[in-house]
Amino acid sequence: MDIQTQYMGRTIKSPIIAGSCGKTNSVENIKKLEQAGAGAVILKSLFEEQISKEASNNAWALHNAGEMVDAYTYIAEHTKNNQLEAYLNLIKEAKKAVSIPVIASVNCVSSTEWMQFATAMEKAGADGLELNMFIMPSNVNVSAEEVEQIYENIIQTIRRAVQLPISLKISSYSASLAKVCQRLSWMGISTLSIFNRFMEHDIDIDEQVIRPVNIFSAPSEIYNTIRWTAILSKLVNCPITAGGGVHKEDDIIKLLLAGANTVQVASALYTDDFSFITKANEKLQQWMEEKHYHHINDFRGKLAIEKNSTVSPFYRVQYMKYYSGIE
Ligand SMILES: Cc1cc2nc3c(=O)[nH]c(=O)nc-3n(C[C@H](O)[C@H](O)[C@H](O)COP(=O)(O)O)c2cc1C
Picture 1 (cartoon, rainbow, N blue to C red):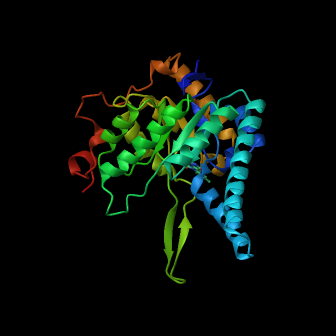
Picture 2 (cartoon, protein in one colour):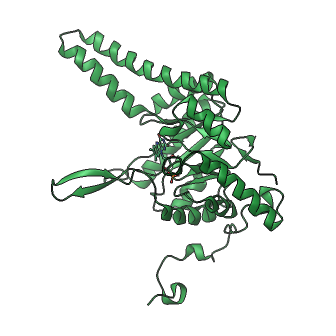
């Protein structure tokens, strides 16, 4: 059974990709992920916001110690460059250590930094770049069109700056998600990565404080990913890499049937271990054999929604008795 597929302009040996997370942040782990059978690995994101904050903290410490303003700028830049340098080294070392594609990932909040980071990562040898983009839609002064325009500007800027294949990782927060995804897929990206998952927060009623919860996804999150993969896969102009809630081996097969080209796994690398990938590859091969499929393309997208179709169980969202059987 041939489980090769296409990802970011390359043929990869398995559709299972180690998604960006803490487990993809060291060469040692990246090697283990390749051994476990991952088709590609996406490095932990470099967060512009975080490195700018650290740079600023270091520089303030110096400033408060009575140093000059020039030194403030110098230290801020120095810290930022050090962090970027460490990331570039990770790319270079990972490239030497494994033969699967190594995809860099950036999360930036300004368009100038995106360009600087992307160019440096391309030079370091990354096989592709995943743009982890999200602007919290909480500002009442910014319209949906303005937010979408910011995304488009960033993609355009990076598209011009680098030759690397680009994967755009987006969230499901949009009033018109299908339209936004379709528009963004026309902008020269190689892959649409659905969906980014966000930290969740709870309220502690004893201490009356806010605390992070659910660092890892739950298995039930897969249903939203299946739905949107099926809705989007024939609508967008590029392949889909789907992730979010993949905890069972069968989930990979489901997302391929829904039309994904590749499937990303992050939480399961923590809650299970890297052997999850090995088991899921085996399950995929075994299932293909049972169903007499020789290649992934023999069944990929079989349950995706056809481009102009308005009828699908995936469009149903209300609990009508007729559909759910629940009174
Ligand atoms: C501990 C942890 C760290 C993560 N860090 C990143 C990150 O740096 N960049 C990113 O784009 N996504 C990050 N993610 C999100 C994952 O790549 C993935 O999109 C999300 O967790 C949904 O997939 P899952 O259900 O397999 O976990 C992280 C996830 C986890 C669990």
